[in-house]
Length: 303
Figure 1 (cartoon, one colour):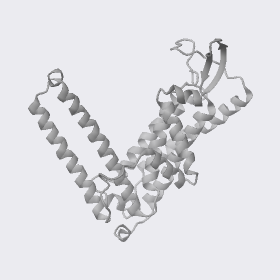
Figure 2 (cartoon, rainbow, N blue to C red):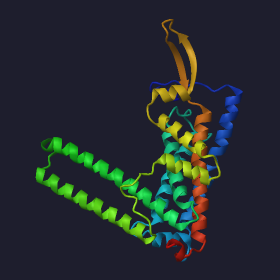
Figure 3 (cartoon, rainbow, N blue to C red):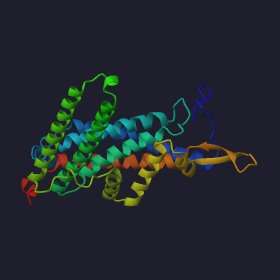
């Protein structure tokens, strides 16, 4: 919802139901945990790892793109989204609670925190490396698809874009070489631990990542996947998902089979999404601390 100063197609509605007010108070109590988690992440990211730590060895076996680089980026990505969630939901926020803006923030935070946790969670270092490479293969596929689509558009209207056919051909060759280089680097890392390169195999998706990470947190797999699927639909402008999830209050029966309704966000849905994101972020920090402070064994990577 927005306030009366802007409207933006919405209107403000006061929350008066005692049960809903209690839910909001509980949700804000959980939101207050976010700054503490962000401080923990700052301290952990600044801390030095042991020279022979599990994380140091993970990086040794994933050189060209260190496993820790992917984890650190994911946690920074999650922390930025959590920071914004805290800002818009803090108790002294000047504006009303957002209608749907919380969902893309929560989804991004959940995916990023779950990705970091998913990579770090296995005690078997070969599995950590394998997951890191599976994610790299997923990224390589998506980046290649984006660039190939751009080339298709350029082929259709080279004059409009202002690029010659010869230049397009050169850039296509560069893309082929770029993909071959990254594919080879992934394959080389895979060979170090005796596994098949994941490039060209079944691509891991965020339903898999969130589900595995939820299990690693000691929770039911289906719960994490369900929350992720629900907020994914609310992240997109899906009227069907909104009707099935958000709160509806009938305002007028039009006597023609249709009714006018007031659609509002629900505290339960927002709270579930943010809690899931916070859990994954916290778990990722806990496991990262262990990987930085616990000695590893190179022999474990070559079994």
